[in-house]
Length: 90
Image 1: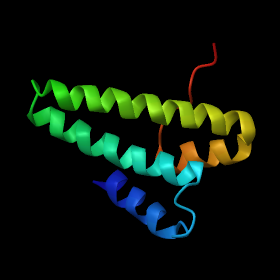
Image 2: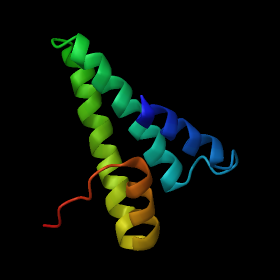
Image 3: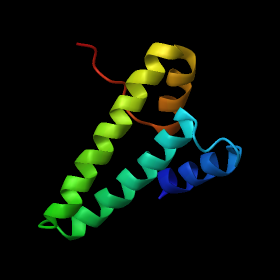
Image 4: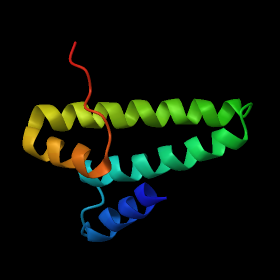
């Protein structure tokens, strides 16, 4: 519950004009991921939701990779705020 409320606070802090920023998109994808994860805990055989979750995870991963290449400081702050793991480098 704490993570959901914290993510909502981060969304409110963002400027309403800046919904296209990478940080805003990552936060919104993270909210969707957490909501779908809790849904799938109840409905284990909902395969369409599982597919949607995998697609959103991929989109968030690509955005985080882009952000880490462009601005490492903002990337570190964002993953710290959202409490998500840093990606493995290949």
